[in-house]
Image (cartoon, rainbow, N blue to C red; front, side, top):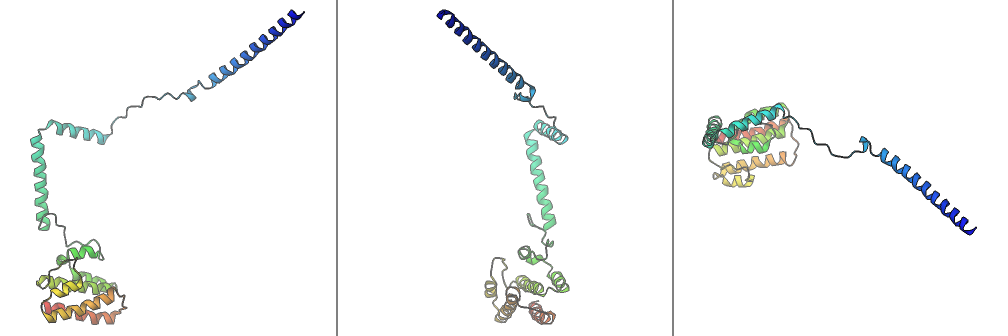
Length: 217
């Protein structure tokens, strides 16, 4: 009787193990089937070859032509192009690597005006500022005009980095030095001190600058 119980227990345990194994096998098959589709295929595909565009084809042709040319020919061709550029710059501007000073990109580009003061048409800028009613700006241009004439006459050596006081000290003639110093104070008070100026006051100050500039001329 005891042997029958042991046999029954063994058969029952074996059956449960088989059922459990069968259930797990079905679960694994379902899992494998679910994640074996193309959606979960992470194998990298080789990139497609991109056909070069029109511009790249032109570059390839240019490089191929250059590669077929002797290096001496390329060297002399580059030298020739540089000489042509230098000759054109000298013809256009009067010297190599010198910008066209007569062209002003902005009426208030003071750095450009000061760098090219000898070539700036200040009368045009003065008239333009007057027509716009911008009298402080017109006074600044009148001050520039005095510096321009002083430099042309060799009375100062113009340098944008120099201060007004340094430029005043360069003037040897005492009368010219005193008058220019007074006009410079007017310019400083109006431009930097934001001294209010109307049309009537502007005409008075303009007369002082013009009198000095005409005296120099």
